[in-house]
Amino acid sequence: SNPRLENGATDNAAGLILFPQNKYNGYIQGTYPEITIQAGDRFQGIVNCAYGSSCYVTFRLDYEVSGATPQVFWSWQEKNEGQFYRVDKDLSALAGKKVKFTLTILASGLATGDRALWGQPRIVRTGTVPPTLTPTTPAPTDTAIPAGTVTEAKASVKIPEFVNCAGTLSVDLLGSITTNGSATVKYHWEINGTNNYTTSESTLVFPSAATQPANTSVSLNCGSYTAKLIVTSPNAISGESAFSLTIPTVLPIYDFSTFKVIGTMSCDAVTNHTWRQEACNAESGGCWISQEPLFENNYAGFFRHDGITICGMNLP
Image (cartoon, rainbow, N blue to C red):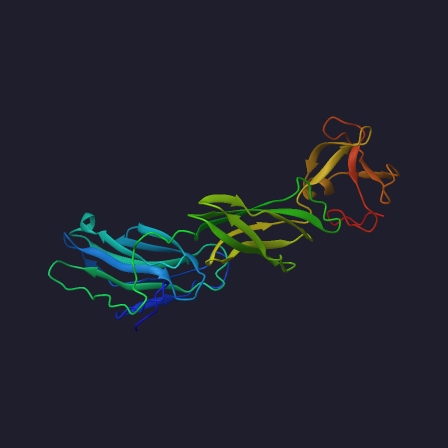
């Protein structure tokens, strides 16, 4: 009852505050009883984050006709940017059919902190009077986002070409932030997983509307992680990108005549070969050379650093 909308206004009609399952790409959905759609019927509602929540979710309206495979009728991706959006979709294409509708909320990556508000979701039929929105101050509006706010933040990751898991490795976190006007933007990265890490807060100055990079590098142990770019000022908006590292992901294979990489091998392939050791290139664990040619090379193999297990093999 009387939910507070993303922009601080209070809706006098009922809404649904929903929490996706607390897992990566979690979701929650509810299916409603079958209804026969008439020409002119419309699905209406308000989609936004619950007030004070930095949610990053997808709202979706699914439908099912007479037991057939459910279909997506409409979807909307939502982040907290201080506005709400009105849904008003014509259902006439389904007129005469008995339809079950499902409201779905899907997390975009991690579901942590997602509180999605579906305000007044309803089917409006000709001759019916829908509930009205009587907000308190500040008045809600569907006008453009005020100039000088962050409208988008994107995040991705770049890992090294080869991952041996010999200690930590440097991972490049690649981000970009877009504003629709001049602004001073503060942001940081959060990494959660095998090791948890939060970078110090950084600042970007935007003289005008633009997109700027928000990149950084961190040292991580091998494992599975989720990285999240978080904008804290002038408004809250976040982008997420998940990445995983397997121990090891790929093993570089060297030509030990030139010490150049000539290919890569997975652990499954490595453990199916027979290796012999010899000292080389001042590596304490030595060079491990395949007894059979690799990549048409008779003197090819991998480095083993002393104390580092390769692909689970108990090499001396």
